[in-house]
Length: 365
Image (cartoon, rainbow, N blue to C red; front, side, top):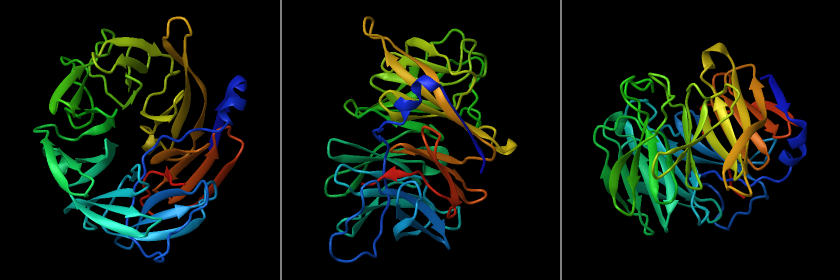
């Protein structure tokens, strides 16, 4: 899996410094000993499918050498997340026949080797955490998605049904409000006579709403590629006459700035508080993909946040999934079952064989 690295010289040293991982972690199941298990510092975790079952892998960073693997059960899963107690949450969306919806999340404590089964809605997709509770977004087959809340006793209860919402695309959560966008035409293109809109759900008010993104220069039929909510700001990746990455007030939808992304657009991820990754895998069928690293900076006088591209990666083959753990980027080509581990300074690139249908990566320890 060939990769091209580019990085502005001024920022190269800074990007090589320690990064703070802010990603979610999940998983579940057990075969470890009854004694508490210890894992080396820097251990990463991910899920993978094999022979009808999904398994959780705990691995060494960079080389991804397996430290331990735990079967999660039959079915397919696409993401994992970790709660404040160090437990891994693994929603399984479908059974191995690819058509029957699952309706539970496996919660697993790798240290204590203990697991729980939490019943929720059909097709659980993402898990978020706030105020000693877990919130599970369930796809419900893309018709009427639902939100479940799981209490400290690990009992799940339906909190809301989002009637007619369809597929919840790129859901975000800031600890109080959920944000997502839907696909009105099934492809994510926005009808020419409709403004760009992001749907919301407030936990405190238990109320669903719509946030209109005010952009007079948006092109008709513009498509949203990615959302990111960070420090009261909503970043949206879409094409307009000004650029491709736009910053809004997350409460009002007021447009604050268009950031120069040099032509790329795609899904957004927070690498650390001042570094956003923009992943463009729209060209999957053309055997390519890119990741841009976008540095945010705050004006000391006005407090305004600006940004610019400080580096990135260009891939010569499809990239299905990208995760940031510590100071490494992990890219997965599920078509060819390959891992790619790249240091963010571009100096260390390692390719290795991967299991099938790999989820996101998270830092476990």
